[in-house]
Length: 385
Ligand SMILES: [Zn+2]
Image (cartoon, rainbow, N blue to C red):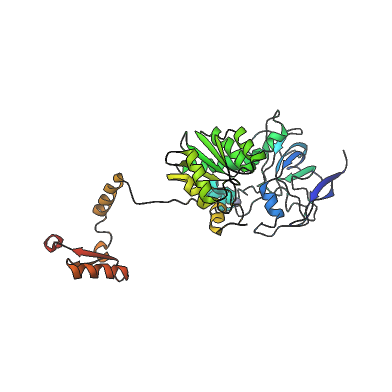
């Protein structure tokens, strides 16, 4: 075992990786040193290297967060992973980035949206490795965590017989599972649903698998290029693929998807692409009443409007509502009846007599916003009560 650890750092956006060394660390009582087997390159890493990250970053630092490895040293008081499985030297683990602190008011109030914790934990950051290079990224031989210093740090055992290459996909796959679970809770992902996945990068491909495992009927993938991405999408079980390079306009893509999906349109569309026009055209893949999940506009880079990015980044639920159904009307009648004395309903209404002049005035007043609810009295005797 050497006493120096090789880590890759980047000096800033656009920089090439630079291999540097960090001394072998002490491993205190609630810390662990993990030897990294492999680490995927995430779209987030690429965004960061393109300078798309909206917040300042502690350059130079070590990127990479889709890692799987095994524990080589562990303190005596670090005995369990986050779900409660025992940890020991030799155990295989994955370490996700940006974990909720689970100590703040936000995390306590909104545990299901603790992904938006304002004080997320990024491995061993701020932990005695203040001076770069650090030991807290995946493009390195080892990663260090210390739960005494950062109790929010999360460690997850992976099965002893799970290959590290498979385990390194657990972090990006989880983001797809959560997106579909959000759709399910919104009532938008029924069993057998027809799902369109926008984007055939790593998240899009993983979303194709997650959709099927979670009960989708058919999955259609929209992306490019044919090799290697669309071909792989079909190997992952996509029923059909639409090549956005061959269908170069939103109109052409909408027509192509609608033809494949057939019927009224897709039940669920999920944007995994971050493509600027994904949102507006993805809406048109949907049937009326369908559900759209925006997980691709992870940064605001290149977005046609920042609002599509904000939908993703704020983890919000946006609902459309058009008119009402036949079954809703009794609710309106009943509410007015029960609440007739609780609101100044009649103060909404400005009355106009029926006739050419009265009706014209009622409409003019409404158009000019002089009235709230111009109301034409047609049978005065019936309106006296
Ligand atoms: Zn928190």
